[in-house]
Image: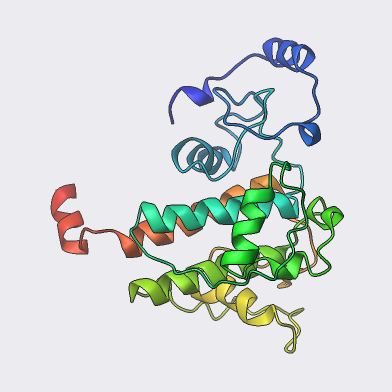
Length: 248
């Protein structure tokens, strides 16, 4: 996957962490040249490589760790959604028009690292309002839940479909019916889309979705891998015939 995944010894990992003990909460995440806390045997290794190195949708921390077991905050989800929106608009040339909602209050000060991401999504695209319903800055540091991820990413894909005139759906998985989905919840259509139409999320082994469960950075990377695959598959400029011919 490139140089960012050079396998380092445990001793070097310990040295790096001691040299840079700054907690991640206090520093803005930036791309890392090497990620020292994940290697090839890990189940999410390939996805982390794609979203960090190829698509730049997530970042490593300044001490060269990914910290995949950490929970994704609502601020971080807003940043991911903003970057994905830019990828759809620039890489795939899909002009998703703003839905101007200037009255939305941004729950962060202008100097906060997440301010531009949250402001754009709230005030221009009317997204993520459900995560900041009281417009309090402390909401942004709370964990993003699985229902938040289903809502934000499904909504982006729906808008991409509308703007492009192309379907991004993968079909229907009849087995993916959640036993804990409330029929009257505003999130229900988005959870159903995430499970069945776009298929970037899955149920747990007991057939529950667990909408209130926080999502980890590893899980977020896996979700983004599926979303970017959808975009590349359905919004590619090459036809299926051209792709098959090139492969031969």
